[in-house]
Amino acid sequence: MEEVADAELISRACRFPPHGQRSQLAMVPQYGMRPTPASELNPALDAATIVQILLETPKASATRTASPRCPGWTCWPSGCNDLTAELGIPGQYGHSAVREAIATVGEACTRHGKLLMVGGISDRSVVDSLPELGVSPVHLTGFDTDLLFAAARPASPPSSNPAPNVDPPDDTLRDGNDREPEILRVYADAERPTPTPAPSSRCRRCV
Image (cartoon, rainbow, N blue to C red):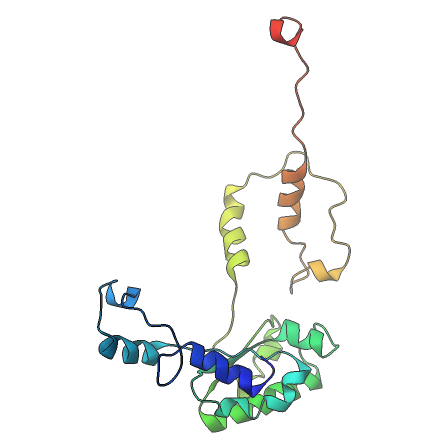
């Protein structure tokens, strides 16, 4: 999101009239998929809805102090991988430009009672310095691919024929701990063709 109007549009899309333009429905998991009158359902779902507005570009800098005033959204999460890339300093999470951006929106969020959440940083020294800039103690600790591969790895037997030359071409394929992703070995094994056995002379269909 880069404009206040975008935040307002997102907020209205997530809530029922008169607070928004969310399409009406009668059955939701929160009510056990039982048909529920709109007079009861709409205010309950509006109150339970959490709207997150993601700001990660320099263009959004001009709206960072204005967007927390936008009604209807709950928190401002920022992934610092994209933010540092957009700023032209990829991976430099402790850079003054990053801290300045976080501090600006942190002050605005605090003033308007919104939650500021920052993710994408594995350096604990940087993470521990963020609360003083207005960042909440809620941290992004992983995402779906990390969790799925972590769970699948113990069930995957080690390769008996490791593929050559699978080193990542540069540091962009390494995680924050500078370890080669296990996914490279998995893909290399999956893409290696299975050898076709030589035909037997005793098999009439193979002669």
